[in-house]
Image (tube, rainbow over all chains, first blue to last red; front, side, top):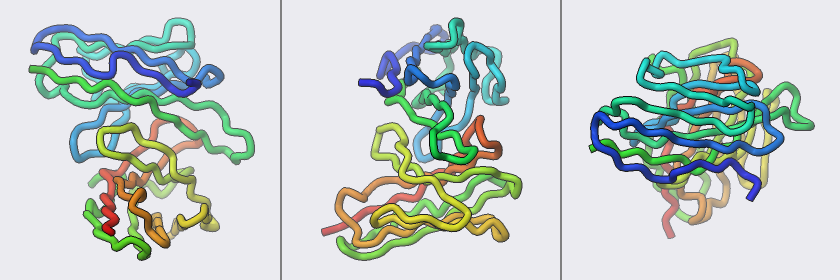
Length: 118
Length: 110
């Protein structure tokens, strides 16, 4: 499978615990994105990397959240001291310049990690 | 005001019928536009990009109206498998974060 993969697919944790999610992008893609989606809403942008550089962070990304992409390949998203409001689907997407598209950059999503904080 | 707004639906559509719905976006400088499809508890999947001149992909037609800042999607000859949530997506730049609407639910009935 050459798509975006995420691990774990499901995570149940108790409030106050730390969790870490992993995303492996499509291999030739240099851009990687994290989004969060809650029930009945569209995905909301959290942060994005170009290679290993974190270029943008949303205000949604509080101090308890940190993301890394140390070698410009896979990325991790860590949430410290989880709260019940962190329960959501965490989606990773990757992109590279699509051939034939004029200036567009199509993002392909992984299956997501569903986090439940008890 | 949300950056991308959609009618949540549901749009209940008989099999074989045509359904159309819109979304509006607030940033007039937005560069690129997409429709993604999302099935229940699954990830969003790209349905089609939306070009300024409008474009068609099989039974799906997308239109962009920059002056009025809205995007539309039309589905002809609806199939049961078209039942899903359709996410209107705007990219303010040519790359970078996507801004999603909350989605329009379409339910195709036999």
